[in-house]
Image 1 (tube, rainbow, N blue to C red):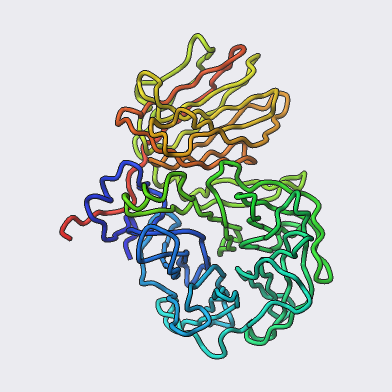
Image 2: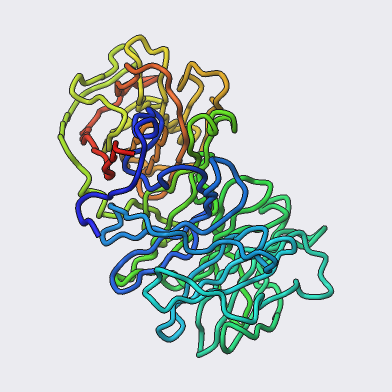
Length: 479
């Protein structure tokens, strides 16, 4: 496996696509959605994902598979799971997880129509997978509950037994995570709901639950329908019941969904999410691909019980040419647009003293005349961080709105923004505790500028570091 760059077949049209990311993971072509089966095995990070080999649209769902030694460079592997004709997963191998069952890697996932839970094992270090009878291992939802969904198992070991939560919703009650127990990953007994939510706050169906300890608490990740974003619940776990104490969004940018986590050999809780497209199905079909995996992030708890999220340190290996600017006063009349900070594949690291200004804006993918630009805005009085995409593209068929997240800074705390720009992907991390990830589709080839400005007063830009990021892929052109 390549250690410094990732090889994959890719034709010239895809390689030259100006919206196709070059340092985020995505398959060579076609459809990607939820991350699945995250596991570290013999030092290698394995990423499985929902994949349609038949086109850039949702359907005929398989499990794609990639592996990495460093969380940065990836190698594509053969499809891990495919639907079995006349089997319980004949209509699709939907989301699930991976566990180490006493040295046997095991996938637990959902087959659909009806929704049931299935397993597969590998005897060759995760390269090929076998579906051992009996299948399915959970053939029906628990009786006596009027459920709206029954999918996306998350499995862990506790006191010598296996436990699982399955995403669901109880009609007229709210989203739910249903708790099961098994001695062997084959015979499962339903216990009770681990947690049930209020539909007004946490939706009616909980997809893709993750449940794990983090410091002195437990954390439940959910992706609720119809909220179209992921939430975290932090609280206490005892006697098979989880009691939430703190709730918040995982990412408020509008395009991050269905995340999954894993614990690596450095005891880090890592997380990836599906970055869905924000353009039409017709545009995806024309492009030949749809869906991107987020960059890996590390989770922690803050003293107030809220979630801390930071990009992993390994991403610094991607940094190329560097520019630095420091100690610049910025107002609405004197914006700052350094000539040596330009591009569509950048990492930006900015620290700004807010001074007496109401708001500060870091604009990226700016055309010289400002016709196209994506604005990252912090409003100190609203305590709001935004990605404003209303001028991000001249293409009126793509989504062009503003997405907002809450961010409260201390009285003397500077704003710290770390931005990863990868063609159509914008991932924003602010002060270690707010994330906004969006998709943008600029049409102008000169929409490459970066500009900082302020409104309602003056800010002091302590520093702006920018790195060019090159592709992690090689693109063979002989196909």
